[in-house]
Length: 120
Image (tube, rainbow, N blue to C red; front, side):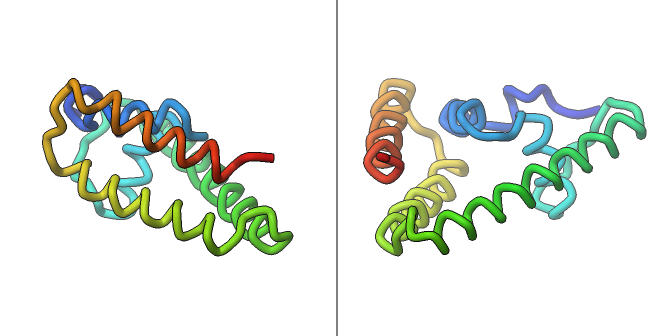
């Protein structure tokens, strides 16, 4: 039996997932398929593999989008550096406790950096 989703992700990670292309379940499935978690699922085998396919399709589309936007010059190397640094910070945050009063501040900083990076 799997842990409730609330136990699997911090508030910051959940907020980022809500703004992403993926659902929490799809992120859990991606982590499971990449052997990054040992979560068990309480859904049918058919539903699980349907979600695996949806997750794979979204991940592939995301990579194609990333390549396209970088190749066309929409995302610069500086933009990529910002995104990479944010990703590294999330790696640190995911395994540490962030005080609830700091969560809003962290999300504000992430949002501001992404607003500047994604400005059209």
